[in-house]
Image (cartoon, rainbow, N blue to C red):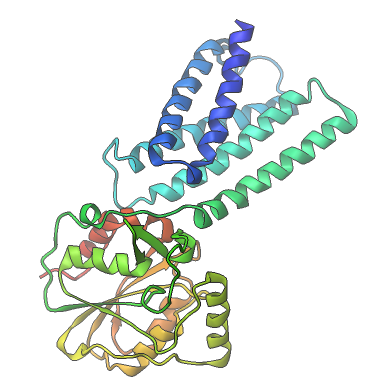
Amino acid sequence: MIHVKKSLDIALLILFFIGLASNFMSATAHEAAGIIFVVGVVAHNVINRNFYRNFLRGKFTRRRIINHATIILFAVGVVTLAVTGAALADFVPASAEINWRSLHLTAAILSTVALFVHILIHASRYVHGKIFYASAMVTFVFAVAAIFGLPYVDRWFHTVKVNRTEILRGERLEVDGKILIVYFGRVGNTNFPAQVDAVSGASLMLDGTELVGNTQMIAELVQSVTGGEIFALRTEKIYPADYSQTVQVAKHEFESGELPALKTLPNVADFDKIVLIYPLWWHTLPKPVENFLRSCDLSGKKIYPIVTHGGGGLGESIDALKTLTRAEVCTPLDIYSSDIPSARKNIFAWLKGLEILP
């Protein structure tokens, strides 16, 4: 039985790390690894059921308290991983108001940290002195890597692939009045090479071989919910294909106050509702969007802002938006870049909750 326990523990540890590499495997493989891991965790707890019978018995030393706490945290993390994973894979009905991907990533971080602490506590029974302190340092490094590394990997190595035929399907809303969907993004304002990486951090995704921008995809999702007319903001200048260089160009725009010239402007007079979609640049509005707001008279209209981001939320963009226009700025929606392919339900619920209906 001891050999079975050890073999199962080693297998679970390997499966856990395979699961953390989700950005480097197919969704099907990740889901399969997750299901096997959950089944293995259940088997592990059945085999070690005597531990729970004595969970509250005996003296609680500092090490035992920490050990119990990490076990509880790990259990919470694994349960959350299972529930959010089932929601993301559409195995169970999922509320559109919950950011399942962010919860899934948070649970992965929590579980990883708890697991390393748990392993360190058990190692302290067998190793001491310099070896133990070295082990503690390694554990600390891995824990920090999990906290900061997993979101980074998710953002910069998660290739986003979409099937617009599938994700644009769904229930529609009857909108009161004419609606204009204005968006700004890198696609259409940048000359990308043929083999550019379509990762969420670079604001890009792929539909087959076609490159699609994050904000463009959201504009199409909004149109699939409300109808309306889409207008893409196009700048006279061409932004660099390299994302880091674009970041520096945007920084220069903010520091110099430059408002990049727009090729054309929409005829906003024909519309009373405007859904404005833009990425968060340097924690606020991109300068091309600011130029649009300064160039168009939006008095008496309603603006429904949607902000894409890599973790900064709405930033200061809504405050900036309110100072640049006389339009009524309605409750905004922020969408994490990796969540865009599954954002239609969230967009539908957001618009339905606003005064956009007849």
